[in-house]
Image 1 (cartoon, rainbow, N blue to C red):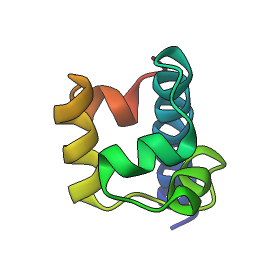
Image 2: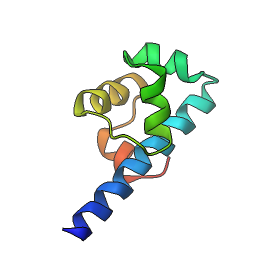
Image 3: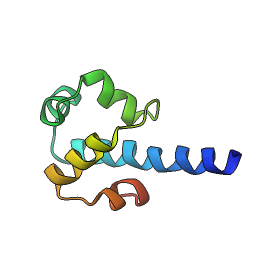
Image 4: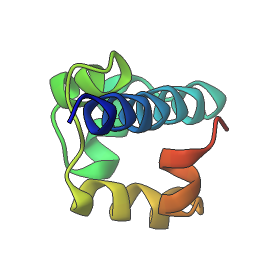
Length: 78
């Protein structure tokens, strides 16, 4: 059980750091990114800081908008 939790924690930290990197490269504020993804600014902040995990719908939407596969979003450091 602990191994599964550790893996989940690692996966979501990749999403948070990846979404933050994309946001920075595009010079988007958290609010602008939130508007694009249909989220609140607080949700974007929570993802970037690793305090929350995105729903699959959010992962899919971000993947489509930014042209990055869901697999890459969660498994690779972009």
